[in-house]
Amino acid sequence: QVKNSHHLEPEGLRRCLQDVIAKKVKIGTLATDQHLMVGKMMREDFSKIDHQFDAWHCSKNLTKKLTAKANTKGCEALMQWIRAISNHLWYSASTCKKNAQLLKEKWLSVLHHVAGVHSWSGGQKFKKCDHGPMSDAPPGMEVAYLKRTSPAFKALKDVVSATALLKLLPKLTKFCHTGTLEVFHSFLLRFCSKRQYFPYPGNLQ
Image (tube, rainbow, N blue to C red):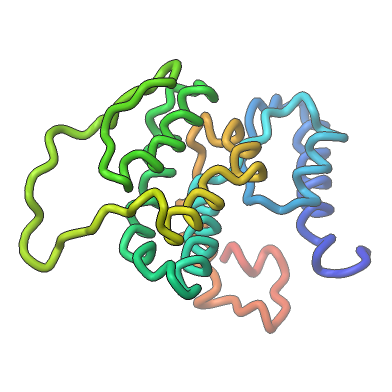
């Protein structure tokens, strides 16, 4: 019924939304992953619905990009920061109070923190880190700050301030995440493999 598997998700979502709307159910917000065709469909055919991105998927995609950068020569120092930076995206979305500008400034503040700078000028809504005084880390747990002139910092800046990433930030302001659905799908796959067809009623029994 569709050209290929890449068209499967947006077409399935389209039919689902049309069915729900036909039943007079009002949809205020819809959270999905960053599927490009889904994004285009939502903009063109369902513009009245607030389309948000799942924070977990965005964090996962960010981790992949940072890992690829850290594996390049001269950028190895970035590896120790990846988990904290991924968590920072999650934290920024969860504390932005649905304000896109605050979210953007909180997210970009990571470029100051990794360089050992915890207060700065120039921001409109966010001018210092939220954490308290930095205490000494236990032996073996130290994380070295990055020098702003280092290849690792420049690689991080390329990812953190990428135009594509900054454009998607407004779609994280409501801090939507589909964790419970991911757990359900993982549980379902234990009994209903994708390699074999199961009718819909069979999935629910």
